[in-house]
Length: 291
Image 1 (cartoon, rainbow, N blue to C red):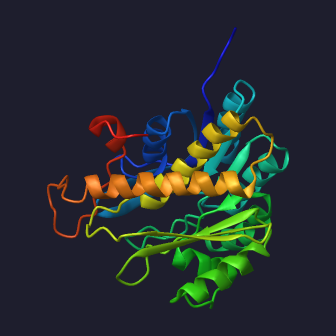
Image 2: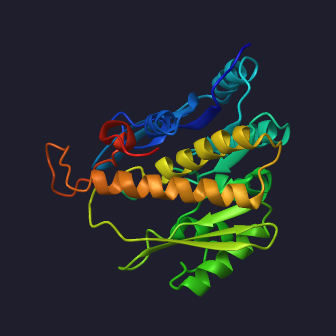
């Protein structure tokens, strides 16, 4: 009798320092017990101090990578990160619309923590109008949520404003919205999950005092993708309901909290001033904690 592990796919850019992008996604997929596959959309020169250069991959080679994976392996769940051009967004939209990506999580990566813009101006509209409707889940942070709504939308400052923006983003077509509150003010971190059946869940975690936050968005969206792949196969249902998605999001947020706490005191940069190191993707593997 043949068996296979849950299979996950990351469509994103690289990070040679290992903290974000494809590199973080693969480590997270492994830590969360899935077989990770990848499609690289850009070669990015970055480290703990930020992005210095982006080398885009031609659309036809992105297509070849997609074909290599999707014609050979049954992908249970996919996440996309850096989709820097309108044509690339439209390419991924077509694949998602064909149902090839399984459960599809969109991490709407637009601007790096360093301030380096990762999305061309004309691609923003493509994300708003074409990508969001084919996503099963989007995971914007506060600045990204505001930009997805409009060019002049202010960032949410309160839990009520977060709920309002999450519901308004749902009207753009995604199956669910996880609005992340990590960019908010001091105090506990509030994340809000709104789903199409009208449910709103709030997740709260103590804020970890650390500069090592590089790649947290990539890591969280990858963890949710892996959790959906694992739970969805265990549940043996073709569609992921809001209860199962809530469980997946909760598990992923708990994993990220552990990874942040474990790496809080790390100093991985030769020049620590202003550096933002990675989280500890291997926290459960190395420390032997429950997965």
